[in-house]
Every structure is written in structure tokens, then in C-alpha cells.
Amino acid sequence: MAKDPPQNGGSGEPEYRVYRAGGESGAGVGTRSRGAGRAGADPGAGGGAGPGAGGRGGGPPPSYRTYRSQPRGLLARLRGESDAEIGRREELPPGRGRKRDRSLRRGWTWRRALKYVVLALVAWVAISVILFMVSAQDRAGNLPAGAENALSSSGPMLTSANTVLIVGLDNRPTTGAGSKEGGLQAFGRSEKYAHTDTIMLWRIGGGTSKRLSIPRDTVVHVPGQGQEKINAAWSQGGPALTIRTVENLTGMSINHIIVIDLANFPKFIDDIGGVSVKTPRICSNISGGKKLGGFTLNLRPGVHHLTGVEAMVLARTRDNSCNPSYTDINREQMQQQILNGIKSQLFSLHAFIHLPWAAWDAPGVIQTDMGGLSLMQLFIAAEIGGSAPVHILKPVGPDVGPWGDGLQPPGNARQIVRRELGG
Image 1 (cartoon, rainbow, N blue to C red):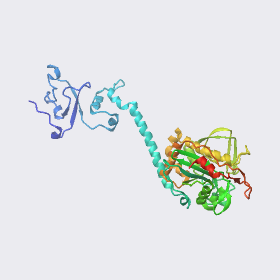
Image 2 (image 1 turned 90 degrees about the vertical axis):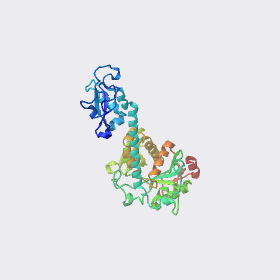
Image 3 (image 1 turned 30 degrees about the vertical axis):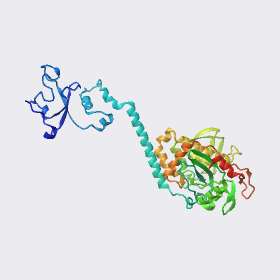
Image 4 (image 1 turned 45 degrees about the vertical axis):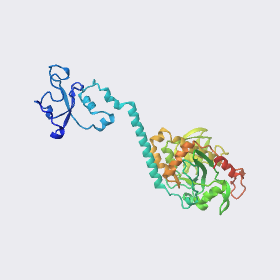
């Protein structure tokens, strides 16, 4: 009587899986040791492979191919192939006419391909979020002294409305766009002595997104300084005095502050692929125009897709030679349209492809009291709240005083602010 094939644990020899030639398993398919496959081994071993097995009468025993049993590779696991499928694949003859088993193709279905695409997209977004958080954390606390102490506490933006003060300073950067403008005084590059070219309140969070701009020439009471243009508060007391002055005018408690950095603003706009803005006829020459180291922007009426530098010039344009009636009010409207354009462009294909770069550069566009988590909530809340309508605290007339071009705010300014922003 033939001996049973030795077990793998007893002989230490590698196991084999046995498959009938042609890809069909025989009655004796199973695991055989190296000794069981050698010449002279009992043909009946292997579970009925001898004469009479499988109802074949006294014919010759069926032939088998043997394959070494081994773990599935990474690609085989991703395709979902079993050990038996790997063996059948090896039996198929090579050549262009080779037919693959239908079961082998099930690992490459469109559903599986879609799953891998989705995983790749999620990974791309995750990398961008990590870069954003690291960049924001690295720049946290870069506000001038005294700013955070002047702010009021608030709840998380995802569930409750916050009031954010956005300001843009008129100091010029030392590098990049605007660094070569002529005609600047010695303190023209100093943040400490800057004036606020842009003043905007953003009520954001809890499903709300509303903005209101305050013209820079609005004459208000600056605590400790008397009647002044509101844009002078920064040069007289920094961000803390600016916050107090805006709160006195509007009656709103400021929870966060964002200071726009002109040096990095164009780079971020270019990262997301520019912004689309509808403008009137624009003929702008800032600081003498491009020939003198400044900026020149000429636009026809209509919708324009602007580069980073063009968007910055539009946001700064106060004097429009094509339209003498163009005022600071129009500039405030253009600034709010630029912000809405940025929000829309963030979901473009170009922005998604460049998302890691945009995520890394975004925190560098601003100085703020907010860290990475709060900024992430701000962007999510902005998307939930939708595009904010354009609101401006319009003056009721010119203010006769030493400034010449000062603007008189409405007497019911606080009621207007509450109506436009809520809270």
C-alpha cells in the first residue's frame, strides 16, 4: 500500500498546489509535497488520481501541472485574485490571442478604478489641508502687539456667527509687486505708520456670510485723538485703536482681525488661477504708472479674468481717468467682488490641481489672530454661507474740515450696520 505523502511540517519541503492541465481541477486537486510529485511515487496518491479515479475506467492517469504554493503579491491582492486564479493564469499560453479568465478581470472593473480615483483625490485634499495647517501655524501670532487683547471672544464659526475685521494697509512691500513704486516717503514701507486703505466687516459663521465696507475717508471719532479719518487710526494706535474705532462707529464687537499682505496677495491669486470680476471702464495709473515703477491697468466694461497683479491694482484704484466720478465707494465695490471671485475660483479645476501650493501660500497673504483650525472653519463657513452681497456704509455727504476730502457718515450708522450684518 502506498504511503501517504509526507506533510509539509514533517519534511520541511515546500508545498505545491496541483491543477489539472487545461485549467480544470481534478478530483485529486489539493496540496502535494515535493516527494509526492517525484518519479516513482504511487500514481494513486493525491486523492484518486490513479486508474479508475473520477469514473475514467482503466485509462491512463490524468496529467497535472504543479505550482509552488506562495503568498499572493501586492498587485494580485489589489486585483482580488485567489491562489487558484493565479495558478490558472499561469496555465494560459502567451501571445496576442491569449484569453484571460473572466474572473481575473474582475479586479479591474470601473467600480474599482473609480474607488482608486476617489482615494487619490481624497489624498490630494488631505495633503493640501496638512500643508495649510502647517503654514498657518508657522505664521500664527504675527500680528502687531496689542491686537489680540482688543478682540472679543466668540464661539466656533461653524456653529455661531463671528465678526471679522478685514483691513488692507497702504504701506508698500519691500519685495515683489509694489516694491519699486516711486514717490514713497521714508515711512511708506513701514506697517507702523500705515493707513488702512481697506476697512471691511465680515459677519461669518453659523450659515451667515455678510460683508460691509467702510470708506477709508469716513470722518469718525478716534478714541483719544478726536475727529479723524477712520483710516488714520492705525498710524495713531495700531490694530488695537483701529478695532476700538470701528466698534465705536458700528456698535459691533470684533472677534477676529485679518490684515491683508500686499506682497503675497498676487501670488495667491495666481496659485488659484486668477479671479473673474465685472468692472466698468478702468484707466488706472498708480504711483505714476508702470513706466515710473508703479502700476497701469486698462479695462473695458465687462467681465475680466484678472491675474494676481491686476486684481491687486484694481483693489487699490481710486482715481479712474476714464471716469472722473469713480470714487472710493466704487473701489470698495470692486474689492468685495474680488473676494467673491476668489471664493468662486477656489472650486475651479486649476485651483484643485494647484491646491497644495495655494494651501501653503494662503496663510501668507494675511496677518491674523486666527490659527490653522480657525482659518479652516472660516473657509468652510464661507462656503456654507454662499457669496456675500456687496454692502457699503455710504456717507451722507462731504465733511467740511481740515481734510478737504473727508466723508460724513450717516447719523444712524449703527442701525444700518445691524440691518446689513445682523448680530
